[in-house]
Length: 469
Image (cartoon, rainbow, N blue to C red):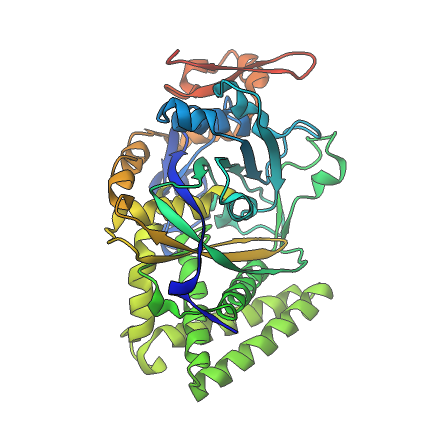
């Protein structure tokens, strides 16, 4: 029997969040000078203005150290002493046995802590939030998203990459958001996006970029997000009208409208709209066909299906499917989603950090009253989606107002196309290569006032430094 949302207990709370989004960026106008075969209009269609660029002295541990030190700096002694766990959600690989969460421990004064790394493309951190809500500790999302130029990767994919981390302080009685004790999830196995170098994690040079079947990944995203939403609706009486804010994983803003249109279609279907029922049924059939074609490596057929489904979802977005006027239900849902997409336009995909960053963006760009509901979801290739429900408090606005994320975004150094090319040639996590190149001014590649990888010795033991210390 489905519950009413007002009858669902609180599972735990979120006290605050903080982000680190790198110290360098490249604007779309500069990127196309580096890669002239990518039209500027295409990047704008993706919804991207700029991306965060990983410097050669940055890696996932340095990201974790930055957000862990910053979030702990703002806690009182009792809050610090109550921390019982640190869990990092990531898809970045740095060591076969040492969890990335260990890099946050140096900022905590006691050792009675469970430390863990959770691995999944883009959604591990959100899984960790759900699993640990109700306990006192930190969930940190940290990743560096980079793309190659192989045959499976679209030329524009590089400009959806990014670097970033988000730390979230969970507690029993936090004042930012309450997390309700209900969720919807959906999991399956697809090879839309994967990293085959993990077959041998002792050879990290074997393949440094993911294999991406972009249009198939779009379909997997839409399908899995829809399934998770439907599973949530089986447990609680909701529709998109229930929520004052909507957050989903956004590798780039442009994909979000299709996910949202599919959720609108599901709501219409559930309200017994006959046209919506027919459209939903046809999309389900096409998604099943896409999986069959992909398993047979008939990629062109998959791409055709993706085009068909996107066309159908565009009709969901429009009034009567014929005009340029947005349908009222899609427009209302978009108004609840768009404030959460502002930061991603300037960072690119930061994998596990994307959904938490979208939540920060929503809370910083929209004002809430007490006891309003937010639909908070995430998606990860491979693949899995999750939705949970957050409820605002009378302190939500005050806490979010102190983050100043937009100021951080605006203060990143601007790279010229030649500088970006130089960074790409060196690569991130490449401090030894950087120091051995006499033609490079190393100080130009050290993040300001942030932790960075200073050196790595013959035993691959890393040492980090903060220029501000």
